[in-house]
Length: 96
Length: 159
Image 1 (cartoon, rainbow over the protein chains, first blue to last red):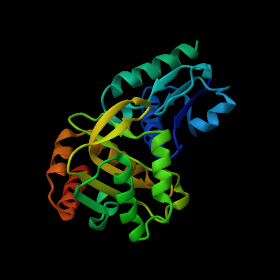
Image 2: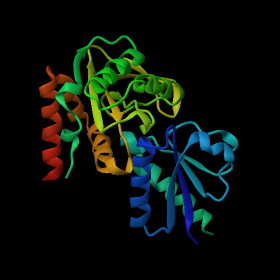
Image 3: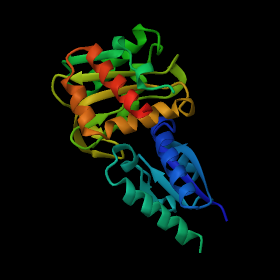
Image 4: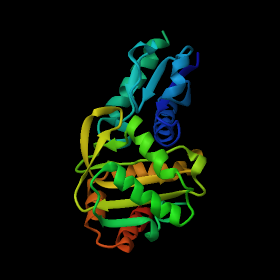
């Protein structure tokens, strides 16, 4: 079943585009069927129903209901491999 | 392939900028973009407001940077304004505003459509992740030298 990943940043434009691109390429490379979408943190007030994972470059409230992985490593390069492994782990778990 | 050289014009570069705060640096760079018609009036205020709510400081290796930007509404054409402040300027960290970073370079992004500028955005991320590039950037003494750093970067990426 296709996993759904939501990339969240402040404006939903610049940083989430970079992060979405990186996450999308990684998931393709490791053969995980996932749809990667972008949004703004303001739109998250509607909740994250239907998503398996959020990757956020901004603060996301604690009660959002799905796992949240920090997207900052994809912009700084520091810890990017670990963040990709964490994303992959969450999506493989949720596929069970 | 469009590179950073196409987006970073000498007229959009400020070196040795005496900038006391993140707000003053955002206003200086926005003024350069507005003067050339890349953004419309109000872009500075939009970036300042966005920076307060969603800070853009990045703890990149070797030297922190910041990438302030705002919604595309006021952007006429894609451009990146670059400031090398005379001393590092405090920016809050993206995703964790309690952390204060000292940014040695600031890239003000003006993007009418992020998907259209994906390759440029990828290059910005690649650029700021390289401490040697950042060192070369802050060592530049003139806007033309700053542009030359990006030109050299594009040429290496394209090879």
